[in-house]
Length: 594
Image (tube, rainbow, N blue to C red):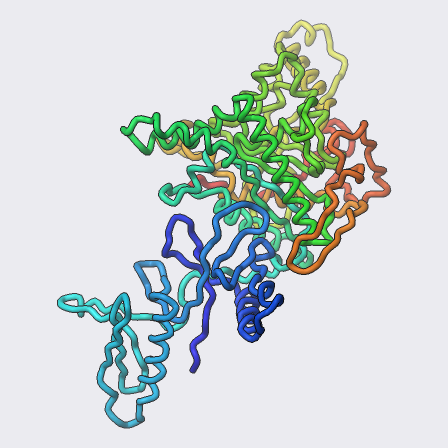
């Protein structure tokens, strides 16, 4: 039988020999496009037929250059290839040789197999010498042909066989990924991305993290949404290259001892120091604005039915500081103003008070900034963190006067995000707030210092709650004992756990799905067709897309199809509509640190 050709792509930037097969629907697209390209005559059509959109619309394959490039972010092209024969290298399957060598093996395999005559003795073994190695073909009495690498000496007892076709890693078929997207989430990274993208550094890059996070979100959405799941697309926004010249200038002056440690300082710490400089901060803010806006416009162009209001932002570490500045700072030049208003903004493990607070003089700056944040009226802001994250800070204690912060931090703990569970969302996050009551107190109660302290905490809690919904959310983690349960040990990987946590993915997916993701709004006209991105209106004429509208009026609830449960997430906690905590997280199994 004719061998089945499998299209592969290089699945890891850290391992040049690690390959993965495209999912079945992309295999058909590539095979069809290749046949069409081969049958076309030279002309204008031939130059356009070699591009194929794959992997849920996020990547474009160039069949002539045999590479794959992302459509929405900057990254070096990823190699692709066809595979006929593979071999197992330890636990990893790899293609065998070049494409021409595999074709040679296939031709000899067909010829050798056709020489079998039933009932007669199998033909003798045959060696095939290739450019890089020699393979041996042998046949058993049933006519089965085996191909193996030819070895000499003692290695004859450890024969390495080749597999016909691809028998290694493959993308799982994902029907949800082929649907039209309902929500777009931009992901802004923190410090160290230039180091994490290097091939000689073992830590995963932002793109690798989002691939894993997207898979977690897809699984959670499919399990919980029933027959009508919504596709939530996650797209990275990178800014690390803006400090390339600054980091490059440090290498000649760096000492040659402890090179790995100096890489951390030159590539990771330098990002934070560079952001604190006036020039570096300006370049980074403008870069994030430019690339975020371009991503939204291109995404809308490639998905004409997408609602521009269904765009949210999540950011990690310093990325949370960057987006917080872009969405809350009052005086910003035009080049640092987003051309769209996010629906939601979630900061994960972000040191916002540590960096932003250093330039603020007013004690109420946090409350003022959050209350005037430039997100959509029905959107939310969440400051999410791991309890042992050494970089994260709370924000709610900074929303009251300086003298009341310590009391508030003790009286009003952050909202707890329960552990992940694959069952549908049935309960709300565990809110640690107490129900506020103001009964008349007797003279004895008024004389009690303990009672006066509780009353003061209640007033502080009421003052904060009157300013809006809850902001601080903490992950609930399983307790450990002994050395493994110490704060310092748990803090080692707490800052990098977010993109690998089902608990975090469930919190974000459930929050977006519980909100109304299809608020009616006028769409900007989109022109163009085919594989070329059309010109898209940036939203300047749409009031919902304006960066600083003059006090935008909230929509009439009767005109917006939002369920009552979703309204609780943005309603003040002391209101009758929010007797429970915001339904923004998923209950489930204990979160385990890895």
